[in-house]
Image (cartoon, rainbow, N blue to C red; front, side, top):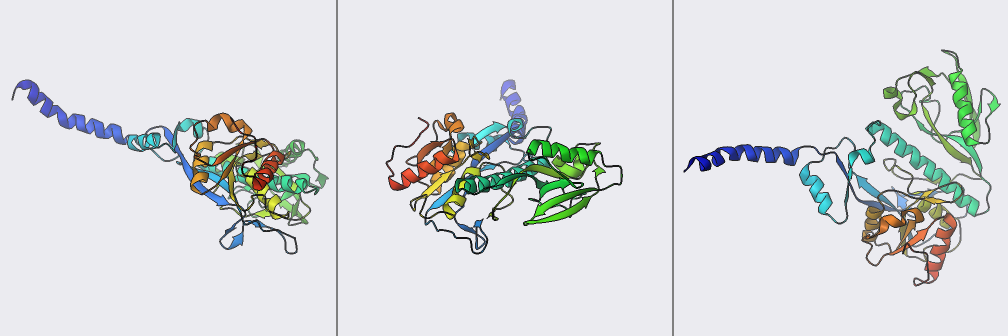
Amino acid sequence: MNQRAWAAVLAMPLVVALAVIALFKPLPYTTYAPGPTIDVLGTTNGKEIIQLPDGQKTYRDDGQLRMTTVSVTPKESDLNLFEVMAAWLDRDDAVYPKEAVYPDDKTADQVRDEGQVQMVSSQDTAVAVALQALGETVTPSLEVTLVSPGSPADGALAVRDLIREVNGTALSDDIGKASEELRAAIRSTPPGGKVTLTVLRDGKEVEVPVTPEERSADLFSAVTITGSPQIGIFLGQGFILPFPVTVTIDPRIGGPSAGLMFSLAIYDTLTPGSLTGGAAVAGTGEIAADGTVGAIGGIQQKIVGARKAGAQLFLVPADNCEDVEGAHNDDMRLVRVDTFDTARSALEAWAADHDADLPSCS
């Protein structure tokens, strides 16, 4: 064996070692895959997902209105080259730079908290939109959407408490102004002093005294500003409703993208007939208080998940139309929607005639 051959033999273990290191070295990427879909007209743990008070007239739909999800690798997960390449080669998955999905300035706990807040807000807004479509009156109100564990509000305030007064003074009807009024009252509370909140909880007004504290962000997670008196809550827009409507979804599911499907399911439950015509319909989209449907992420993976779940029709937010090009929907029909009303009208037309002319992204 000549000198060059010996050199190659001796170098081989080093080459193999370097290849192994390269293959298993963590890469700064995150993957999206189709997640589970949930029929919001159905049940979970033996209970209806859309829950209404006893005596409230409801109507059964034998079809399905499925919310869709995306399975995203957690921020703390480290993907190697094998895993990234496998997702890249899978036509149903997607690969994104981790920094595009998880900003560096947010911890995994903060990302989780924000997702939970968005889910609470999406459910409450969906209820308001559906009830307004039925002619009911709803009144906006400042709402507690998250209570940070270990904070002054922990055990005193609860998610979905509607804050009506602070220290005996009514808050503004404008949610932005009301939020600032509350923050100003908390900031002006002397050390060791209490701020008294009047909240609407389960239809009853309750006075809740809370002692603000200065805490670090690691204790209050995403709900604090370091060095400023805090009580440890996230605030959002809630609504005073004519009767309670509850959406029971696994709390581990976060984000705002199921809002449209929640609103349609609530409307369908409270009206005679079937919005789906007894068929399986899926979709996605954030819902605003005025009924506008907003864009979401992971649309292609949600389309795949819906198709695999047997959906025949998929509702696509108008602002996501560019993102569905090349989607693997097969024979599942994609329908463009921009408001709750257009989504409802499209469903009614499709239920009557599956070949009806409907808005599309084409």
